Length: 273
Image (cartoon, rainbow, N blue to C red):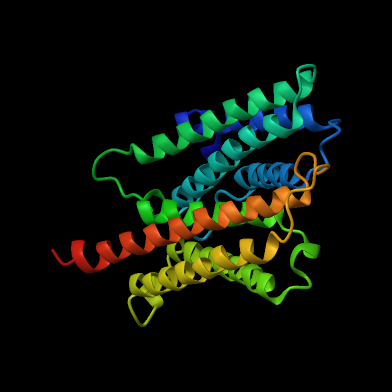
């Protein structure tokens, strides 16, 4: 009964709309000849998993459900936005009606998830806002999203024989793991169990992550681009994926740097006023 009451609210209606739009994308891509693309499979798999999570475990999670749904809406909107650009750019043509339809639905799905994020941010004055609806939380979600894009572009043969590039992959993996840990501990909430200030621990982590990404930002292009782009490379060839990893590394370095600066300002200056 409680679930039916939720579905009658604006957030519930938006979640049903999002689920319906994702199902439309599924039907458009089911027989698509490009459905073997790893990045596209990753996005569809995440959408499918999250739809099942919303319908199955909403009342069983041991942490703040509203904060969790905020995190999902932000991540889903970012994924839809990326898919809405990448998919039509590389996988559509003038006569590809199914692909064009999937691209349009993807943009509508992005608008629905973005609307849910806006509704989450526009809560009544005085109502509690979870960590993931704050600026540091949004940055943590953005960092996680960018490294997921890096993972979808990585191929084992790109770095398996080069220790310098293996260091870059270790940076991506470690920062991703620690980001997930920070998010889970914060929305738990389990931060009160720390013997020292959790905010200061996160600041130290953000600074270390920014430094590590700075090294990867230099090392990855330096050791990856040993030759020019092949003439017969085509769309999304291995060389293009190296470029993708390079740009996402730069973007994530910028986000970690901004995250560090904002966290330092928040903890050491604003909180002491």
